[in-house]
Image (tube, rainbow, N blue to C red; front, side, top):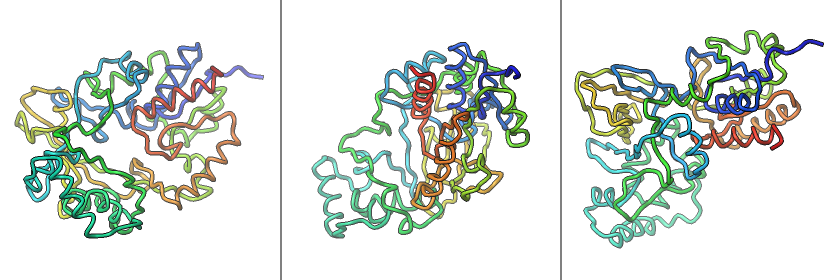
Length: 370
């Protein structure tokens, strides 16, 4: 009988793995955290360019209604007061998001909630959609034709790489429609960006754990597993089981960054490009997440694409076909008590950051019997 070097081998230094590592360390456990990337933080990683914290894997805005989770992340780094108020660009016309009285005035010059509501209802009534059969019908039944064709259709088809008529209706179960002049995208009570970037959060969570980067778990999984009593796995669940039940599908993203010799390029952190003819989905100007005053700026053109091996998986495609495959993998994972599976990729769920933290904390409590 040999003594293990670590209590936990944690595969993945993203948010789930880092939270688990912190909580285990606080309970006196010894953790080894590995990641195949060259940095910690997973998709929340920020790269410093000219003093600007560039969100290397797309815009990340922390938002939650859960005060305990908000207090938890703020115990590692203070969050600022950033409020997500994206703008949509359609054929060089600008519209506020989410759909609100500013949007309705920009579209129709209506000035009262009653006028805006009547306009939407008139468009919906003319179509007589009783039982939406796809995303297009679902969206139009909620917001009418003008909003759909200008602000939803092109963006959604670029995002998913499929025609809206080929996408299931449940993808847009509801759309935020506000009859107030409120541009705050989220309804959550707490919202912000870590002051100094997300790396400060990751560093705080991983303090006390041993971290090894540029380590591919699957190149030496048996040797790595042998180092610890238990493994916490946060990667793709189908990859863990060598794709025995088939490949799960994801959407991926591609980014093109530019450093510009101007202090302010677009005046907002996020501008969505909603027409199909524009190949990218949005432009991110990173300095605005932290109210930056640098003399230069960094912008990112974000492109949506199909996931292929070698690219990063971002969004699970939770249709019936993929969910059936995932259920097989979940059943396999339940037969492995020495491995704990968690996070967006291992659970094949689209999690926001606060949901990842909440899921990790819940699994910690269950695991330690608290």
